Amino acid sequence: MALHNTWVVLMLVLSLRGQVQTGKIFGGRKAVPHSRPYMVLLELKTFQGTTIYCDGFLISNQFVVTAAHCQARTYDVFVGLHKSDNYPPPKAIQVSRAIPHEDYNNKTKINDLMLLQLCEKVNFTEHVRPINLAHRGDHLPQRCIVSGWGSTSEENQEIASELREVNVTLVNSTLSAERHAYFSRGEIGPSRGDSGGPLVCECEVAYGVVSCGTQDLKVYTKIPDYLDWIERHIRKK
Image (cartoon, rainbow, N blue to C red):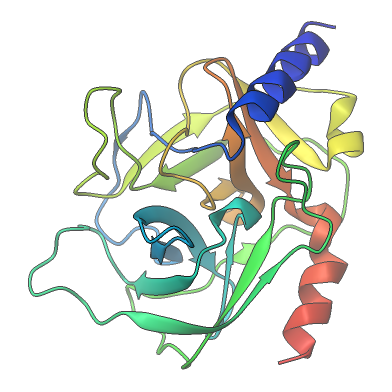
């Protein structure tokens, strides 16, 4: 019941604010350099002309998974990063096709999932590798980590200079099946800037995509519910 009430509050916040900004890694730590070789930093030019950042993750040499609310006019994709302020800056990869879920709801953030097809295939190295997606199933994964370059405090709105990560514990909820989402509780976890990053659990498998949240509740789009959708669009390339 408590989680259901929190979800109602979350939906009210989303309806009042419109597009939610998700992502600060609160209570986290610096990641070991290049220990998350699937991580992708996205520099986005919005339709209003501003620059924002999201995260994503490689699932093949030409496809990135991120959140649908990270839709933008243009995308610069950076792979193999640890520090976001590398100099000279790494080469940006362009996107040939952005594929947000056709049933994405910007108010409720249901179906908050998007594929990005890259204009060129990336070369896999020690620092650049895809991550496997969780198989279909309804079990609640354990031992989960979220990574990202989101800002680390309310005072500092800049993205983090180094990749950070934080452990999160998912909670049981009857809403999981209805909302196609996982949930974690507490202030620790992602918020503004980490949108689109992976929820990684159990032997380095991606179970979710960072979607939205409040101070107490974090929401992750549930990848096992979307495998057919992902596979169908990858085959269309």
